[in-house]
Image 1 (cartoon, rainbow, N blue to C red):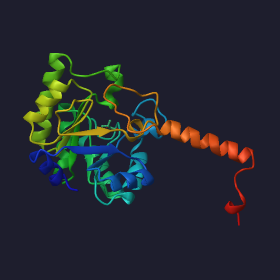
Image 2 (image 1 turned 120 degrees about the vertical axis):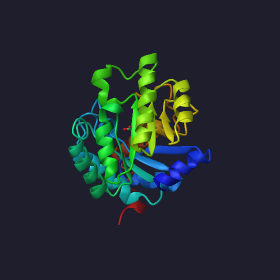
Image 3 (image 1 turned 180 degrees about the horizontal axis):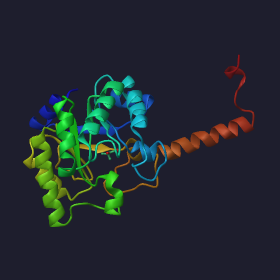
Image 4 (image 1 turned 45 degrees about the horizontal axis):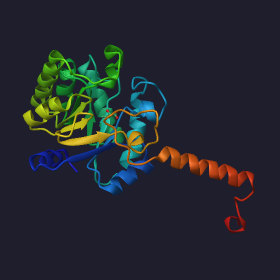
Length: 262
Ligand code: KIV
């Protein structure tokens, strides 16, 4: 999978499927399923490391997760989130950090949150030949500015800024754009306006593709239940059942049996 093929999918009207992954074993299954793109999201900060926000995860930690994923992958395009503090306000540092991600993880592209505020960083990274995916709407690295994880761009001024930012990102050369948690009508408007593929998470059904966080769509994280989330499994209950059965089997001396020993 290449960024060009992803763009061709939009031109052909084929919907694009993206899932987050952070480790070798899960990424191998995502690859086997034929998913188009893997996002090594900074949501690793929440679902892997247990932090409340995406802010604490470091560049080294993101590179570690990305390395685990790229070792597993044969086909999907692997995009890696640049973590908070590695690209804002200093485009030279942004380029250095993007180069580190590309060199050390051998991924295919990086993703940055924000529009006009981070445009200089995006342009500098693109100038080195590194594909960039944009991310607008609810940008979790700005949670302390927003104050809540609620739907963004419901008001006209914020919606207008989002539309303008999405044009800027396309003009700068981003190969694709994530729109998170915005009204479906706005997602549709941006997807129709842009030539590059728009991948939504809570941005409605009329965008060019969808992305979900693996732990959420597998039902591992029961506490997180926004309206946009469809659960494809209930792995929390499956894990719990298996762990409880194992505990019972060890305590009752059922495991290991005669056949399970040397
Ligand atoms: O970090 C992440 O998982 C993301 C998705 C929510 C798009 O950025």
